Image (cartoon, rainbow, N blue to C red; front, side, top):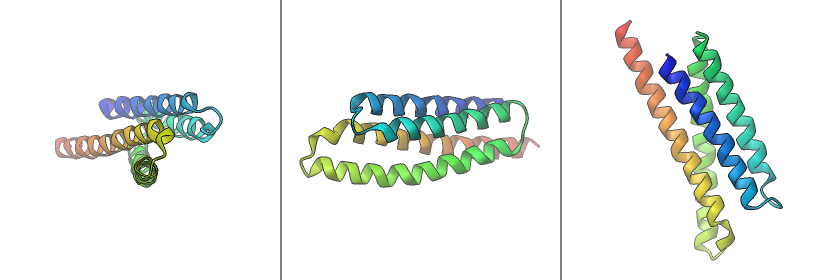
Length: 123
């Protein structure tokens, strides 16, 4: 369970970093990037710390959180890439960041599911 917890903490740190990069790329319009990246990053770091301390529901909570974020990032990346394709070149950085957050979310979901299945087989 420690490896799952560490992955969840790393994911949370990545979300915070991505939110910060998004904000710094456009401070006038990207305040929500900082707020959402920070909020969900801290939430996932919290899930990871709870998992390290042995709270068994924490990986499931992190899995649900990452799954829901993957859905949101899918929607936001599609909308943003459509804007880029339509000629809005100032959205390229945002599109890349959101897509990276989507990929990280999918990776955490896949890793958590795979790791939990392996742990269940060992039990």
